[in-house]
Amino acid sequence: MAGAEQRRFRLFRGTREGGELKEYQVAAGEGWVVLDAVHAIQAEQAPDLAVRWNCKAGKCGSCSAEINGKPRLMCMTRMSDYPADEPITVMPMKAFPVIKDLVTDVSWNYEVAKRIPAFQPRAPDNADGTWRMYQYEVERPQEFRKCIECFLCQDVCHVLRTHGKHDAFMGPAMLVRAAVYEMHPLDKAERHEHLRREGGIGYCNITKCCTEVCPESITITDNAIIPLKERVVDAHYDPLAALWRRLTAR
Image 1 (spheres, rainbow, N blue to C red):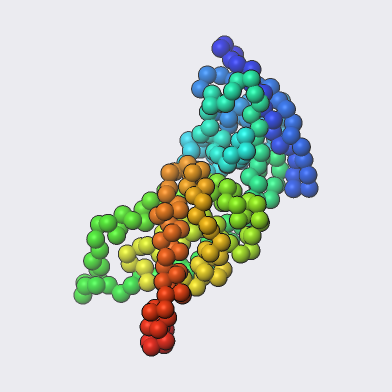
Image 2: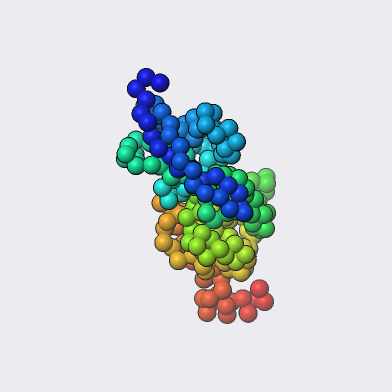
């Protein structure tokens, strides 16, 4: 390949039972991203290499991996961002079980999503069956709908990644999913108890690492998690709110 540059890669090869890093060399073209190199290795050197991808445009969230230790999308990570004389290491996401090579089992996220109380519209405001809403109320949850379900935020979260508390904490991506419903101007469902107990929102100590890795630049911590925390605190720990619940038997 004209103008190609020899680059070294170290890719994880194996399954959940175990594996190792194997080194490859690839002739990288100008402007290549990491996924280009992985595809070249798969085509020319390791046809049995398992890698998940789809759009190659940073919109499907399929090619999530850990590149030199940081959760990133392979299709949005330029090789030119790394020193040419050092190898680029690509590992599967640590927070989820490995299926094979760079592919992980992320089905746990979808099971958690199913348990989030669904959207419940309140009664119409007008006799003709319509609602009255302010534009800022409509716009507020739109940011969260940009989520592409890459689960990089889940992977970087220390509660899941380091401590493995998948049975106690739903993770930032699922808190974003809950925020889509919770902050919708028409929603009337009560999710405070779910977020506090099954969702384990108290485990989040707002390090903002999830916000830092989000490829869609969703302000996960400030705009989703902290407001949800405030709602849980207001509902369960505010003494005036507790008195009101006792008086109204709610």
